[in-house]
Amino acid sequence: MVYLEQEEGQARPVSWEVLGAGAELARSLEVELWAAAIGQGAERALEEAFRRGAQVGCAVEGEGLDPYTAEAEAEAVSHLVDRFRPEILLFPATARGREVASLVATRVGTGLTADVTALSVDRERRLMEATRPTFGGKQMATIVCEGWRPQMATLRPGVFPLPPLLPHWQRGGRLISLSLDFRPRVRVRRKEGRVTEHPLERAEVVVAGGRGVGGPRGFELLRELAGLLGGVVAGTRPAVEAGWISRDYQVGQTGRAVRPRLYIAVGVSGAIQHVVGMQQARHIVAINRDPGAPIMRYAHYAVVGDLFEVVPALIRQLRERKGMQVEPSLL
Amino acid sequence: MVCLKQVPDTQEVKIDPRTNALVREGVPAIPNPDDLHALAAAVAAKEAVGGRVAVLSMGPPQAVRALRKALSLGADRAVLLSDRAFAAADTFATTYTLARGIARLAREEREPGLVFCGKRALDGETGQVGPGLAARLNFPYLGYVVRIREITPHSIVVERRREGVTEELESPLPALITVEREIAPLPYAPLPRLLWAQEEEVEVWGAREIEASPEAVGLPGSPTKVIRGFVPPPPRGAEILGDGRADPEGAAGLLANVILELEGAREEVASRPGA
Image 1 (spheres, rainbow over the protein chains, first blue to last red):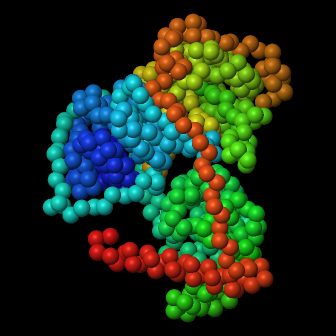
Image 2: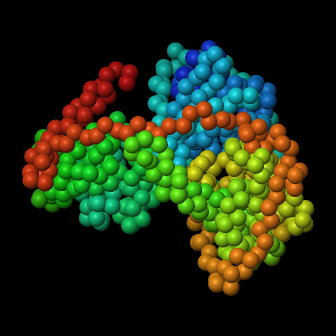
């Protein structure tokens, strides 16, 4: 069973990543893939879940579920666990998914593995093997939950691929609609903003700057380069702490994990705390003055040199070859 | 009440390049930074509504050090839950053990109270103990708190922030909150307090003192089990393009080729029907 993080009928895309990972497990174990959505709009969110591969959808609506509180949400999910006894229960490792999963695991009395980046199955023993980074990404641990059910995990966003969206006539599923009332003790007095998908999460190209970029002027260059490639600019923790880029665009252990097709690391030394956030990128390119920097080990291609020479030259050549005019401001 | 964990400073954990194994010897143990912010918030709350701040930790006997630090930073009482039987606990067994400790503390302090937890520990990074503990205690849970707006002996109003959403939540007490670092700056220990903390007793409670059932703590009480630990294999290394120092223009040209080739592949994928 996969928990969808949904609001007003719209599930966050990361929910589909989790659904896709759940589909793999369901296939290995030869069981149905269930999706669960809680609160107003749950049924609408499940329509898309069916087109993404869910076979059974559980919608819970009722008093006390809207607006979202972790408490009522967890009660509703726990109810589904008690009633339908899933073997495995997966959540996105988002702020909301993590808190709901932690409450549910304790409520129903089972184990929960956090922030998983790889999943496999021991078919004979029907065990989910969940692998996650620990010690700031320096070590990986594979974790199982043997004698307790369900086996629960939260999955790190941006790591598992999105399952394709099938046309609606190709996919239908069984819908179970429940109406349940809850009385959460926590009350939402005010709510502002919406859960926003961060541009880095779906970026195809990320241009990241580190300490070596040296300042805002360097970041201007990175923006120029990213603009040319339809990419998003990100930073390492030192770059964020120096105030060259907003914390919201930090990639790494204490920032976000990204998995673009192309990751261009400029002036990034490649500390492990950064690497854990970007090593899933399909292609990694480094531009760095120091050929011995750790980033050189993680990159597929690298240019050793001064970024203030290399990046402007790169921008110019990309523009030329893309058949664009060189803007005078660049020269 | 504040929950605090002593953790290895993960910044200092190194990998032995020969054996590709984690080197844990000589790694300094520190109080978990998020938990110190939780302590600072608790001390501020005490100044606002009175009461006492008790700090609770589970760990080996050496974790007394982290608790002394907490005393120096404003805690009134420190308790360490330490017992061989508690070892190898996962988050599920940990929340059980902490909940037993809190039950005894609450009896002794005669206060329903407010439990503060840091967002997550530096070493495990699960972020599961706070909400899990709330569920164990059957306390209302308020997570990702960035500010305490109002606090009375019977209720609390907080502001919390998560992924673009800001919420103002209200809850009766007792309750459990997990806090973001920005809730309060790290406190500073005045010298007399520092000296007092070195002398003050840190109570140590084992399984018996908190009436913990042996099958619910440590390894037997932990549903999850690590079956493999490994250091990710070292990556293979980059192909260096040209000579970026002597000829930046040439190297940039080679890099432009690579990037355009990758982009071309992307356009092909994008134009395929159904993709």
